Length: 402
Image 1 (cartoon, rainbow, N blue to C red):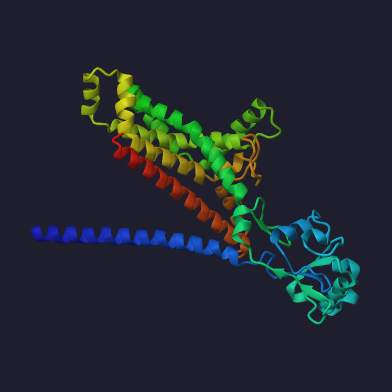
Image 2: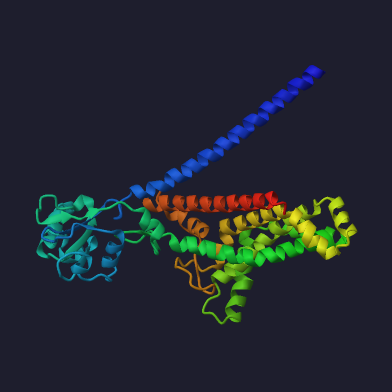
């Protein structure tokens, strides 16, 4: 019997070890895959794959940045001297315009003469910049040259202020507005949820009667299980019109609405974990505090809260994690405008909402697809930084005996 028990214990230990190893390896592989796909973005040219920008060979401009290309085709940069060339009004030309200049007969059977005709158009005008498919580039025309296309740079991605991944000829992957929008609503959501959550946790742990606690605790835990899309519908139907009317706004889908809905969603997590941490304070510590003449309130904020600070910190971290990683509810109530927020009462867009809204439309393996994986990597790093910071603060408090 003893031998059988030993064998069983060894088998259980082995299974647990294997399970832990496989789980850890799977998590590591997911992280590696996430970063590998995301960093592939910086191997893509700033001009859409399969297309080139052509100019007259007499034009002295050799290369353009992604932002300069966008400004030209948006008609915001109108003279070559603004981007280091000779003075002259820039004439943007898109491939489809060739069909309004020549008939099908002139372009030849199966458009075999298209490269020649494109070459003629570009050769006639020194100020033209043409965006055409690479397969139709006029190879035998020395009057036409291709502008050097740089790969998408780190500065374009992390320092850019425009998120326009489907624009042509040069998609814009400026992630700064998305990072700012994510942090903006998460910060205000926690500022709302934290005092309320800790307050309710103190009430349930120290002040509420057992009967009240038995009703409230399951009800609060039940809120944590409600799907986020339900919270999104609630926000859309109730909070959005309420915020719009209260603050007299053109639209109610704002960062403030997103913060409110995230605060509501984070509350059950914060309350449950913080309350459990407080109830785990040893009874001897409570009684010692009261025996020394401390009041009930003094015992709560001088003994119980400091003792359970690591648990409260865990509640805060999980609450922030819920807020930062939330997708559907935020997607439904924030307006989804990828702009740098200057106020709580304007639409914004977050990283999770962007991934959810765009991943289904992004061609697999393309720059847009890879940029969304890189957004996921950024979200992972933000969450990791928050967890490490919370752990560091908790350890410092413990080392000081707080």
